[in-house]
Length: 315
Ligand SMILES: [Zn+2]
Ligand SMILES: [Zn+2]
Image (cartoon, rainbow, N blue to C red; front, side):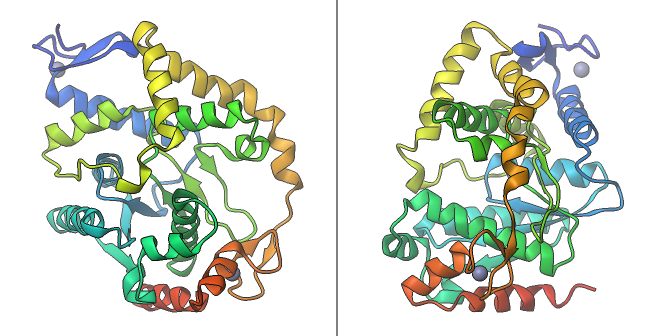
């Protein structure tokens, strides 16, 4: 196997592109793919300030690294969920990376703010762990982007994540989710712009990126995600991808190009208003985050105040 670019011995094969690369050109290839996705989906401009949601895992750290290498003004947000040693370890990885690159990282810790972490919050919630956790993460990301005057929130969702989510949404005909499943969700009614620059790259590629670049990341998956249906959809897609490389690409990109328009109307019909409690966009009078916190007996505004304080140093 030879590198497509230089003809030297290749270290990594990308079957769906019928290509192989040496270390140097693998990095170059992945960086170019991210740059192309940013332009193709009009995610953001060189002058924009980007908030990267980092989990300490390979995808978000690789994303942050690539954005910095491409010259973007990218700062990190780490949400410390307080899920035992998993959160402590992943926080350490995010902090280490930020220090090595001299980049700014904001850490929002649920335990510091509420005195309790996700495990307690999820136990008191009547929804599943992952959906409660997702609700809180989205709320923190949006609020931080807004209070810190960022132009976009970038997450490390890759092709594996996006195609698995798409399969799940199609299997259950989640029309609303299908309408919103885009790599670039523009700002709307007080919701920050959300972008996924890794949407054309796979988990395997991001892991290789981190190894070649010497980026340390947490290998463990979140201990609470065990048995999640998204993992089963990933397995199913991996099976199809192994027998016909390019399946995930075709499924996901084909949906964006040809399928999504059939669902768009649903999204446009949803009206957003401001939560009477916290002012964040919601479809109800009080947003689901505030309702959730009040049910548990926590003050939802404590989180807003904590983020405001972190962001106060920003001009
Ligand atoms: Zn090469
Ligand atoms: Zn609210």
